[in-house]
Image (cartoon, helix red, strand yellow):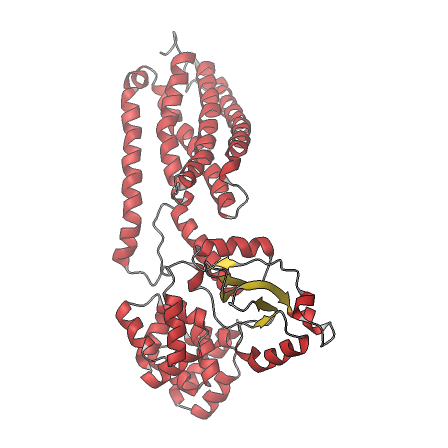
Length: 459
């Protein structure tokens, strides 16, 4: 709301080239608000604003811009201004930006960095893609266990301004290996002559630089921290990861899972930023696969062609049967995939999942089966739509719904577990895929039940 009010004022100042008023206006804004204001502007107008910003505010604002706006802004600015922004950016945000660019552009921008910042940037970019090493920053405070509290506080005053966070102080040995982490409040509440070792319990939680970023999300969620240390394979402290970066990863993972649940490949770009041909490509593969799967439905109906010809009334309930099974399967798949994603369920608990879904499927199938039976039987009492054997038809529909919903629930719950066990992303067992699977098998269940219940009458 505030952004909508001040945006016209910002545009008027830019168009009027009232640089003095514009400088005062933008410097009164916070970095996130300013990024939101200038993101919709033309690249040339964004460049005008950035030339008036102090270096620290310019770097912070740049970090909050969308990738497309960042790229266009760098093209509009001179090398000197680009170098200033990149050198002042936090190392983790700079890494996230550089890894999205083509290799040639990244090499050119690395050449604009100061030697010290270039070394840091290359070090972080050297970690595998999607690893925790790409998220971390080397800006932290580390002390030795034989220091006094006075020495720690002096060190913080001298170097804390460049640290990502001062909530936790990390204790390392002579080789740089992490041996403990101590909250800053502990140093503020004890006498100045106490040793760091007196405050240590040697119990800490750390991340491995080579681990997948999803590991960081799970660890932060479990331990409720704002920052966690990152070590290499030898236990040497190499950086820290803060919760804001992990929240970005969690958002990206959730977005990717939702897209896969909708039967599309992960877009990897904002919806409006991705090109139309690539958007079609991302969606076409799954649609073709689902289409081929639905062709099996026609094959199954062809297999029961004689039964349909003799009891045409059965065709009336096919949409009801297959949609009920598909819906129940989609429900179960969505619940289990989300439970796996947030760590509520592990593969070792598969039997508990199957047992719960079996009972749930029976209960839900009984509810829908009863409704289906009552609907057909009640309608046959006032009309002859379903013929002289309407009660048997109603029983067929009711029993089939019980079986199809149970089967759909079990399929939807076990397929994500099987994919997880095989090393695949459970989200690829999307709701449409489960629905397609249950459509085909639901027809088999339907006509199998019909052949038993209606034998000697319609069949």
